[in-house]
Length: 154
Image (cartoon, rainbow, N blue to C red; front, side):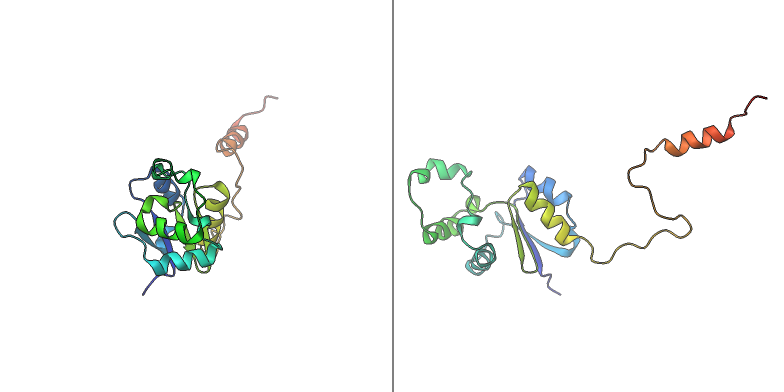
């Protein structure tokens, strides 16, 4: 069975690995873009979801500066060709969840991907325990227990 969610990343990129560690990747197909280059179809599909090739283009790539691209006016066709020729020109990670796409490492994008990849069925509550307190201090229960054990003088 082919997974419809896909994450394009670099295995040796610390930022990508940190982001992957915070996501539910069990429901995703992972593709290291250095080992398995993206295909024209994959790039065209991503661009259709993102709205343009420019949205997928990384201007932080070292080759962007060394090739003098910052001084040139790049067209969509140029950007497409650059991304296909060199994996470093793709913003990373690119996370495709169904028909949604999340590009890059901005907190807004990562949070959106995390939410989209979250389990669709909520976990059932523990029986007999009631709702869990999310923001309670871990020692709060210990303090109450100690207060109950204190003997009040007469």
